[in-house]
Picture 1 (cartoon, chains in turn cyan, green):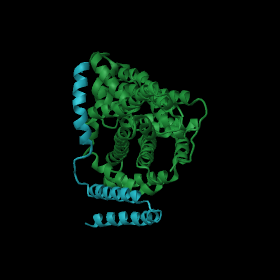
Picture 2: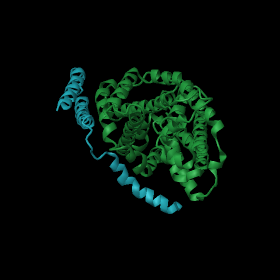
Picture 3: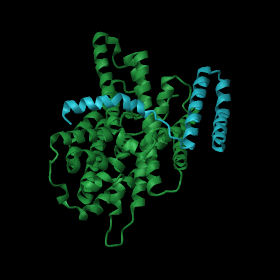
Picture 4: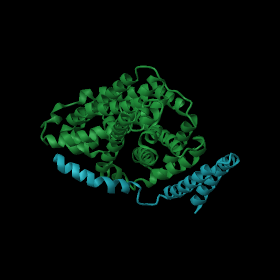
Length: 78
Length: 369
């Protein structure tokens, strides 16, 4: 619980540093992208700091490329 | 949002050298020996010409529009929709690559040196240094790499030279026992691991100063780096033998434990590991720089520096999340990984070249400009 709070505080500190500048320049698309990235980063950092075992994004690569590997190995004979 | 730095031709040659030997000098011998056993050195030397061909392909794509990075090239040649899809795929590859390299460095330090430290703490230290480098920009990164380059080169050559007295060529026999298909498969691995991960260069090339001699320098440094890797593999096979090379995870670390000159120069493995951490780190920071630059160019954002904070948090999280244990990225996904690397460094540039030739034949106003 403590580590989650610390990471959320760090995320809010980073947001407090950057968001007012973006708001003053009226770049709302930038603010939107920034908030999405910060949310994603906070979620992933909490998972990382607690060392939880989660399925990784690389399973996507495995799903796509394992058939390619089987196909090429079959063709080239290894 | 344009990067104002310019790096010189010597800098880019050093960066290419460090990127080729970067992550590979730790795990390359054991990966290739896993496939081809004692013929791994043949696979490795056979993979040098295709590797240089990949470098030539990247340089050729750069010469189409010398001022545009890969993301801008995709938008220009493939159009907005297909170009954005391919750009997202490419940026995802760059981000996952940076996370996996830092994970490898963290796991190496965690399993060999700092055994009781939790992994997120080591990663935090690495991310802090990465943060400092990213806030500085591209030019200081390139100049730092140039300063640290003689150190890395000296340590690797020192490793090879000190082990030459302990080499036995008996360990290489029987030669070609596995047959040609296994050597070819090993060659495919040896092509993809050092050279397939150079896809980020298409984002860095536009910021190199426009003097002649770029092609020759880069091909020369690519040749030197891959010959160095192959000689390291050969020495590893001759000193440790195929069985130990295959089954020890960090082969170069095991090799450096065997350095013993006159019972005086021994236990130098920590010094060696410094050089490898430096090379992997340079590769990671270049990949991450290419990722942040590409993201701001794709989404047409204002300034790269504003988005560095969230990017560091995403990277910190992805380092742990991307692989549950060491076996995952050293054994389970390597067969899929090599095709992913080859897609990004061979198939995508070829696609750009083919579409450019096709479109510029029909419409003469898509010429270089």
